[in-house]
Length: 403
Image (cartoon, rainbow, N blue to C red; front, side, top):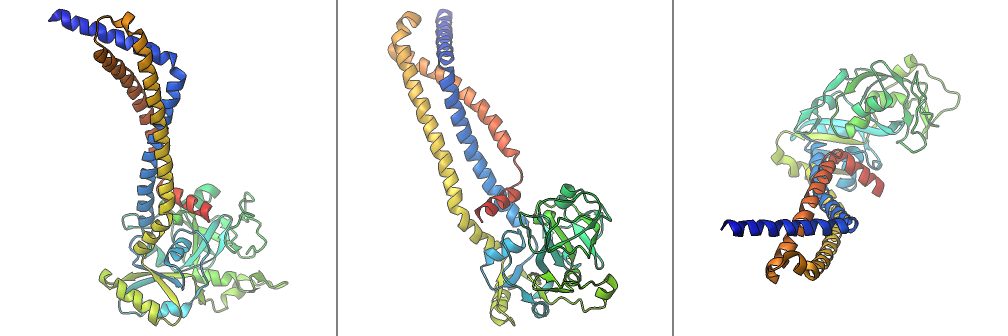
């Protein structure tokens, strides 16, 4: 019995030695095959993880809001333009429509927003103080301040965490806003002092003071600047057709004497008293409002969005599967070649072992070596894929590149 065990051990040692020499002889080709399989598997895992993270991040970007109301259009486009800051908002709503929405029996709260101004590559959101009270992100988490407080008057601005980090903004910093949405031509800054990105339609005569910095949320709010709706109106006193009236200079005291009540808004966040009233309220808004409106339920609008990008997801998954198949075919061809080589030399190395057992041991030895190397590389690559940035930012960049 001991002799048999010893013979099996010697045979296994010979097979492993022969397999290791064969692997070393084909080290370049086998390394490429193992790398291809590892990359293919890592790509499959990364795509699946990215898909799940994107859906989770998108769903958590607008938590606690039952409806998003805006001008007539596609619900997904409304969500992208207002919540994720992709694309431009369609037209505007009259401010009296906000009052009509707030008076609906099923509505608990409303928060209007106004878009159309920017600060370099970042968008400015005009809103009310209730924005910081009702808007939620993540698992219904309220917005928090890492520094300062919410705005309480004209010429005060709250900046998102990414804006503060990228532009090194602190409390009491002075900044200048620009008319229009961000464009490629105003991506840089001017350094110290009042921050002005040099846009042709700049509100440089009305600087704002930073009074608060929001804590990171992982959403588009991090890349936003928030001011009051009255500040948006004050910015455009003395402007016509998107440009300042030549030669007209108004002091801050003179501007405060104007009627700064908002005239138009871009969209309205709506919270309901009961979630069961969602569809009835949605129909009521779209059929009985004083002007044409779209009432988008965020969950349903995001479901439509996933259908729009489902083909892109399938294409990436198919590409990864094809890469994995090609790598497996290459490894299979290499295994067959190795088995033929072993078959020609087995008589002088193994001796009296029967043909079937020798082929089995040869194949097992080679497969074990390849499997171990593949698992090691795959573990490293999968860990790298898992440490990529969060899904919301990745998808935002992806959709922005598509548009």
